[in-house]
Length: 170
Image 1: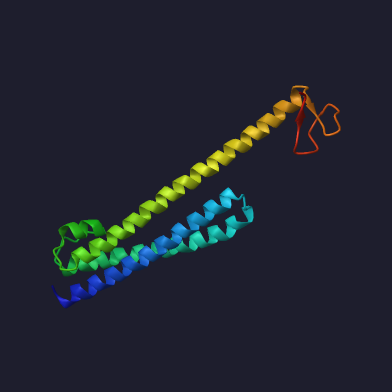
Image 2: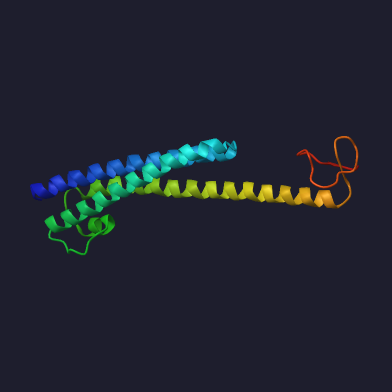
């Protein structure tokens, strides 16, 4: 392998390591988001989203650098110019660093998969909270119209409740 390809391989490994680090940072923001969701800490969402956007922008920049490195390696190894993804490059390239690059790529894919799974869990959690709130609001409206709700003073409740707690007869 030529020294150009060796230098490009080292550059690609560096890119994959930076991408892994950024992907881990994204995972940490997703975990922070889950903590904020569970504790209903609404004030934490903005800083979490700011961090997430910064990490996503960083990941996009790294992905662009990775694509460029893949094209350069493909050119250096005299592979077809249509190769633009790392996976295709690894499948067609016979360079000595392929196993090392594949190892780093696989580690990155494991982290990326975990990020996707964690995001799905957060979506489910948010949907469950949303459903709970909708049910609570519906229950409150139903309780106010059935004639069986009472205020704290024991008088029948009418109109909009002045407190968050409704008492039911019986």
